[in-house]
Every structure is written in C-alpha cells, then in structure tokens.
View 1: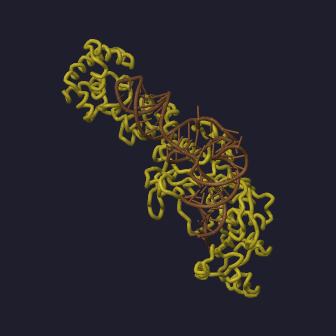
View 2: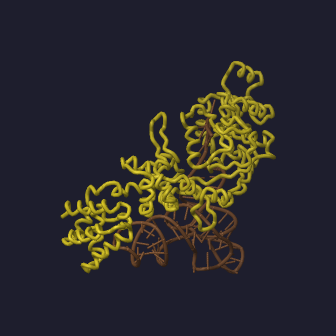
View 3: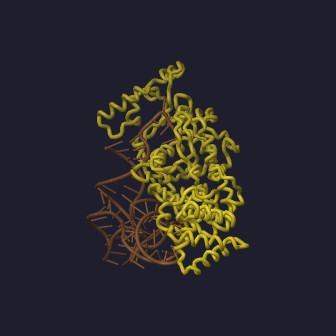
Length: 469
RNA sequence: GGUCCGUUCGUCUAGGGGUUAGGACGUCACCCUUUCACGGUGGAGACACGGGUUCGAUUCCCGUACGGACUACCA
C-alpha cells in the first residue's frame, strides 16, 4: 500500500508524487493500493483525508489527553531561550512548561472559547504524562523504554487545519488496518509518542508492530546518506534522475547510470539485512521469499558504491545475450551507429564479460561499427615490429583463401602463419588486433573476425598496412 | 547539552562462552589468456577499551570511549 503523507503544504514539491510512483515502478514494486491503484481504504493522500483528522484531535482534547495551545512562534522561541538560559537539560513544551504557556490548561474555558470564536490561531498538543515509563517492542531492537518526561507535548494538529505526521500516521494506520510499521531509525525517538497516541485513542490492542531499520550512512564521513553525497562522491542516491523543479538542480539516478533495477534492489536489500548464508545475488522473488525482519541488523551501514557496481556486474553477466542486444540498442543509436538488435546480440557475447554496465559494452565496441580511426600508440610502439607488415600480408592471403570465415577457420589461418615463420603468438597477435580494432586489448580476436566478416577484416588489414607501413 | 540507539577485517557482514573467528566488496600476488576482462588459487586484513561473571569471554553484565538518530505548527 502506498500512502502519500503530504500533511505539510509548505513542502509541496511539483512532480514529487509522480516521481515516487515511477521510481517504485522501475524497481518492479507495484502497490496493491494507492492514489492511482485504488483500494478499499482510500483516499490514499493525507491531504485528501483532511476532514477526517480533526475529530480525533478533538476527541483527545475532550478526553483530557490533549489541549489547545495559542502560543505564537515568537512566544515559543522565547520560552526555549528562557529555558536554555536557565540551563534546563532539554528545553521543551512539556508537563512542566505547559503551565507557563497560553493554552487551554492555563486559560479559563471562557477565554479559550472566546479565542477560538475570534478565529485566533491555535494548535492541538498532546498532553504527555509527567511521570510514566513508555515501553514498546521493536521487532529489530527488542524492548525500548523511554520515560515520558523525555517526550514533549508534540503538536498533533496544526493551525492550518492539517494534522502533523504523528496524528495522521496513527489515525490512518488504524483506519487502514496497517499491521507493520517498518521505518528508518530516525523515527525511533518519536515512537513512544505514537504509542501514547494509540493508547489515548483507545487503539492499543490493535497497535501495529514496530520495526526501526538501521540507516544508510555516508561512505566517507559521518551521518546519514543524503542526495548531496551521491553527486559529491560520484554515485547516484536516487533510483531515477530527479530535477528539482525550483532550483533545477539535477540529482543523478541509478536507472540513468545504467544500473539494472534488480541489481539496485538487491544491493539495497543487503544494506542492513543478510540471509545468513553466503548467497548474495537474489532475484526479487528470492528476496521476497527469504527476507525476515529477524535478520536485519541494528547498526547503520556505510554505503559502498563499489559493491553496488559489483552487483550490477553480476546481473549483467546473468543476462542473456538476446536481452543485452535489446538493451544496447539505445546506446548504439545514441552513438549514431546504424545497427539492429541481431547484430548487437552477436557482439553481446564477447563484450559482456568485461563490462559492468550495458553502456560500456557499446562504449568499448566502437570497432564493431567503424574502421579504426586511430591506432593505440602504446601498442603500436611496442608491438608493431619491422616484420609485422610482412606477416600480416601472409595472414591476409590465408584469410582471403577461406571459404568459411568463422572463429575456428580464422584461428587456423592465423596459426599457419605462425608455424610457417616459426614465430610465437606475440609476434603477430597484437599487430593483427591493432589492424582490426585499433586497440591493444579486447575480446578474442577470432570471435571479432567472425562477426566482422571476411571482407571487412581484409580491408582493415589493407588499411593498416597502408597507414602503418 | 539531553534522550534513545548502536560498536566483528578499510567497507558490508556471518558467528557465538572453549572456532585456525567464516563469506563478500576492495586490495596484493600467482595461475589461466596474444592482450584486457572473466574465472581460479592464495596473501594481508577485525571481535573499541576497562572492569566484572566464569575453569574459560570476542560472545553475558556494568562502565568508558567512539559513532549515529532525534531534540519544528518537517516528514
């Protein structure tokens, strides 16, 4: 189920919701219920549920678990300053300080009613007990105990008529019959507040199970990973590329960098979780099958971009050549190559073993699409010897004589030259590669020959002889 | 500062009162290969520290240190 928690109207970002759907879709995660998928518990946008929340807040006030507060932002600031100066350990709106503020506990009922009737702005705050142990069971961390004196009187209903996350979350989870709350560790400190809310609303019996996941940390310094870190350190943080609508700032995405969605999901799953076996590559189905909260660790995990690449490489190597051929097409077209999936499928075989990304397979395969524009200088200086042209000519003659031009026959033609001249592979191999591909390294030469075909290979030898002497 | 959470190789982690503390990424060496990769073999590399408990602790308990989260009319 996908619920949009958009209770803060000030933080509305155009396109953000659509982005969430697209990102999930790319990951292969389709919600059963959502604002666009429908379901029996809608609406699924909290902004559209606005009319539902007020009654619960009012109910809490009526039952003595919450109160109206009229303090202005300036007054709140003043209060915090005052407490700070008095060296109070934790300056907060709580059981001690609420008696000094403007709220329905300090003001007379008449005064409160008058203020509300006059349209004065107010919020509703939860009346957190002064001296009570709040305990709850976390599926990952076990029992967590927090003293209520450390929980402040959080605003649960804002002056703009919207609930805060805290109230909306509890109300919706209850109404939508949510069974498990699995969220980041940053929510742990406010979990006691949520437990209190369930209790005061009379829903404690059906309270969902809580699990607080360890955070993903920056690879270098400290702190949780943020979108800024990615582009600073050269890896994406977002699944899909995202352009901020106001600043136009672009955050790179895994999809655009050429990652497989499954590899991305696989990598993510292993940040904090592991199956307890040596298996690391898991399909989504296997992940669903194997994952348990019990095997989630407690400590935050530093993000490892290298490991992410490794995952992608594993997926690349497991992908069929036919599929790779199709995936390569857009990259080849972007390069301006006139080609088709059939040809790309052919070159997928030699290219896939030395690539991490699909894009790389095209990047490194330029020689399949045009004659060498230049010859690798290092190899040229080191391997292009005085005898090379002569051996190449002999090789050319042998190749010309071939009726079938495949891996086997070209290798045989090549070896014949070696035997005849009593030379080693190194005397001709690098020169041959240079003539055909312009490079000093790459996939099997004979495989390349069989793909390029007789005519092309021979004309390239001619070209090299002409250019390099 | 306060509250809460955490701490096994550089990183992600397995493990658990008596183990040669296991795997993966990265790194190094070698093998394979005309080359580069892939693959294979091997190396270096960790239980934060101090006290207990115990015959024995890296494992349990308590402190300390360090790290993280939170501390908004944000989620």
